[in-house]
Length: 333
Length: 115
Image (tube, each protein chain N blue to C red):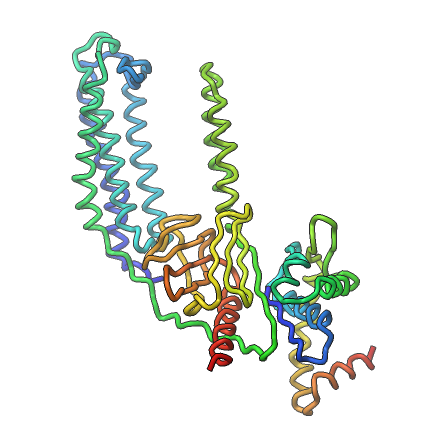
C-alpha cells in the first residue's frame, strides 16, 4: 500500500466531496429562486401509474438533496482517504459526483414541472419526471466520467513482497494449519447493525403506514445467512492443499497442492484492493475472500486466478504451503 | 494454528500433537476462547488415528489448557494467557542448554528431575 501525496488528497476531497456539494447547492439555489411560483405542499413522490402520491415542503426537498449529496460525498471521500483506496479511487469519486447530479437534476426537475401550479395534484402524469430522471442519469455520467479521470490514479500496490520462505519439513513430517477468519469486531457490528437498523426501520415505516411489511422481514431472513456466510470463514492448509470455506459450508475455494505455484503474505485494503468486503474480484485479476483489512494469504495457482484470503498468521500458512511444495519438488527430483 | 507431527521421531505422536498445540498457544497463534479443529478433522489432515488426536486433547484438558465439551469441540481456556510468562523464561533456558551442548531430551530430563 502506498499513500497519496498532499496534492492528491486535496484532489480527492475536491472531487469526492466539494464538487457534489456544490452541484447540490446550485440545484437548491435554483429551486429556492422559484419559491414564490410554487404550490405548497409540493408533489415529491409519484406512484407506479404516474400519479403524485406523496407531498412535502420545498425546505424538505432542499434538505434531502443537500443531505444525500453531502452525506455520500463525505463518506466516500473519507473511505477513499483512510483506505488508501487503490484501484477503486476513481470509481468511488466518480460515483459521488454522479449520485449528486442525479438527485439534484431529478428533484429540481420535478419541482420545475410544478412552477405556476396552484395545487401540486395537477402536475399530471409521470412522463415529465421520467425525462428529468433520465436527464439526471445522463448528465451525471457526463460529469462523473471526467471527474473520475481527474481523480488521482490509484497508488500502485507495493509489490516487493517476496514469496514467504518455506517451512522446513522432515521427510515424513505431517503438518496442518487451520484458522478461522472474521471481520474486525467494529466492522462486524457496523455491518449487522446497519442491515438490521435499515430493515427494522423500513418494516416499522411500512407497518405504521398500514402497508404489508412481511416482505422486508423476508429480506432480512434471506440476508442474514448471506451476511454470515460471507463474513465467517475457515482457512486450512494441509498436504492435500489449500481450502477456504464459509461457515455455512458454501461457498468454498479449494486448490490442490500440486496446482499451487507459490504462496506469500500480502497486505490488503478491502476497499482499495477489492472494492469492498466479502467474496470479490480484485486488482490484478485476483479473487478475494476479504473480511478484514491487513494481513492476507495470497495463493498463486499454476492455472487460474490467484486467491487472496484475509487471515491472521498468514505467514505460517504461506510458509507451510511453500514447505509442502518444496518437499514435493525434492522428492520428485 | 500450525500443528506438526513427525512419525519418524521417537516422541509419541499424541505427545508431539499436544506439544504443538501448546507451542501455538504460547506463540499467541491461538487465543483463549478459540475452538480447535475437531479430532476427526485433525486426524484426517494429519493421517493419524482419531484416538491419537483424542489422546492429545485429553492431555491438554487434564492440563487445563482446553475444555472438551460435547457438541462444542475443544475450546482453548483462559489459562492460555498464563502461559506467556512461562514461555518468556524458555529462551534463556534453551540458550544456556545449547551453550552447554545439552540435547533437548537432556534438558527435558533436567526439568523433570527439578519437579
